Length: 455
Image (tube, rainbow, N blue to C red; front, side, top):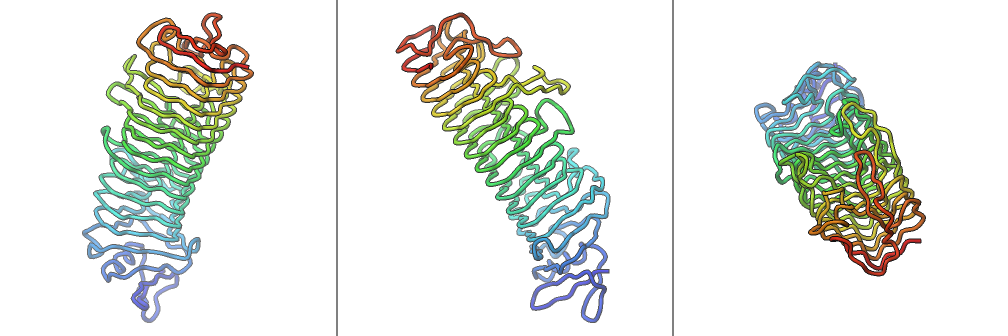
């Protein structure tokens, strides 16, 4: 039976039984409450500490902060219960440093709103931090943050959960951490309505998102963002995701920059307005490196067919290679494979200075049939595609769509360099025989072509 004692204003816990000056405890609640009530930091000596549910609330531990730490990797806090391991509500200034939280894959019950959580932080708990920790082996959410809480995860690792970190109506900063072997999503940032968020996801490694829950894209993502505004996703390495590396549904003012993305089955970076009333306005997608993906960067939906509107997006300076036609036989997914486009945009977008090579279908697609308005494509290089740059045939034939395609270089494209195109429901096909790749300056419908080069 473990025990604890006070030394030099520090509460020290050990796995050894009580002896003179030491107090026995059977669960972590006792020692955490003791440290908080005395206003002292808690240090764990090396070992494994078993416990059921533990709470850190304003109504226990004297309502005081907690600092709990160990030599990194030396201490395992092991869950032996059947509900939730740690529940932190309302309390500010809670910090864990160097601890391993092991769920032993024990079943969890719902914490709130059908969210089974291994560790839950809620009710406006502020300045809650997990630094140099490992959080592993739980069938639920590794860390669930909700109800206005704010959590920092830095230098930590999470593995073998359904979702690594899920923020719902809260704020998270996930920095320099690793997330691996998740069954549904790596990191999720969700809001009940389109509203400010300002979460930051930076410098992380996310590797292996399997999407056991299925669906048509709500699972299987490295970073999934829904109706949040002002989220930053930068400098991450995201590998082996069943759907998207970064998926933004609704909201806006996103910065998705300087990420390395490899082996993403569907769209690597998806900027989408998935339904009526779930619009997305404002996003910068820049300086990302994408390789071996089903589609590169998509800005999808123009307010048609019961969709929302995604607009005002800058796509600049990205390197995209090996864009494949990947089969996706999942129930409800259509078409049953990716299209294999490098970049696809529909409305109010600037696409500039990107390098795209090795593309199954279209290097850059400007507009999707009638979903085409106010697009600028300048200074891009496309090498090795079926179609280098496709331009919506509706825009070529019609008016009031305002597309400019200028100063691009297209090389080694088998079906066409810069040509009108149409989406058939499963792929993009060239329309007609006109080639605009080497036209000095001309206008067709509402499209201006000029000073491009097709070789």
